Structures are given as structure tokens and as C-alpha cells.
Image (cartoon, rainbow, N blue to C red; front, side, top):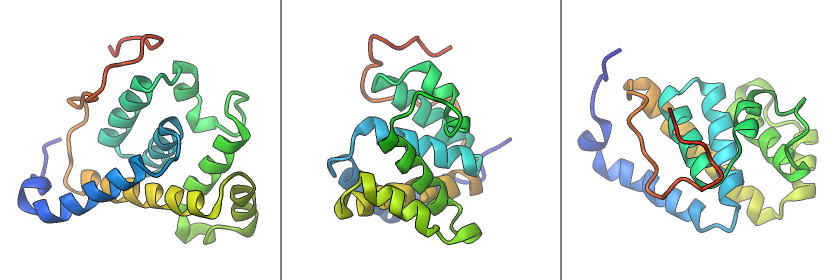
Length: 161
């Protein structure tokens, strides 16, 4: 598979706007580990190889365990996610798949139990951002594999092979 075009080079102002949204999300107060889980889960749903590679590496660099990364596709059946993470993952899936069920009340009510109004807006912005990146990377065939985190991998993680 060959990349179609270099979208950051062609439309740098647009990409900078998405970068500003990422900076906001990073400083929103949401846990970095939680943000990476929802970015990875949305990327799995969308089938974005580049973003799956990136957010798996970023999650590991924040100390995420291999077990939780491997189990993310089946988070509902896996016992190693907190109730807050489960609410965030359900929200991320519903927002990513918004055309399916338009974010059901039960998903909203579950999220509101674990997130303040501001946190829920910030969580939604994070889902919007990753869905935007997924659509860019998939549409223009950004190649997976070359991304490296800009922060060191946590000591508890196993090196990427």
C-alpha cells in the first residue's frame, strides 16, 4: 500500500487546528491513560492501522499493560478495566459509531455517573479528534509502523518488537 498524499504538508493550517485540539485534550485534566485507551478503541473500530500503532505505543509509554491493550477489543468481557474506563469506552464507541444508535441514553447516563459535565465534553472532544485523525490517515493511506513516542517507554513495559 502506498500513501496517497502528504496531508500535513498540503494543508498545514488545518492540521495545526487539530494539533491545537490535541493540546487542549492533553491539558484537559483527563487521565493520559484513559485518553489513550479511547483513542486506541476508536481507531480499532475505524480500522486505522497507523493510529492503532501510534496509540498502542503511546499507551505503553504511559505504562499501560500488554494485557489491557490486547484485551481492549473485548473490554466488556475483560475484568481489568475500571468502571470509569468502561463508561469512557462505551461513550467512545457510541460517539464513534454515532450513525448506528445516536448515543443511547443508557450510555450517556453511565458516562454522567463517572464524568463531570466538563469531563464528558472533553472526552467527546478526544473522540472527535481521534475520529478526525483516523479519517485523514485512512483516506490518504498513512503507513503504519514508523511512529515513535516522544516520551520514553515506561520501565514496566516490554519493548516493541
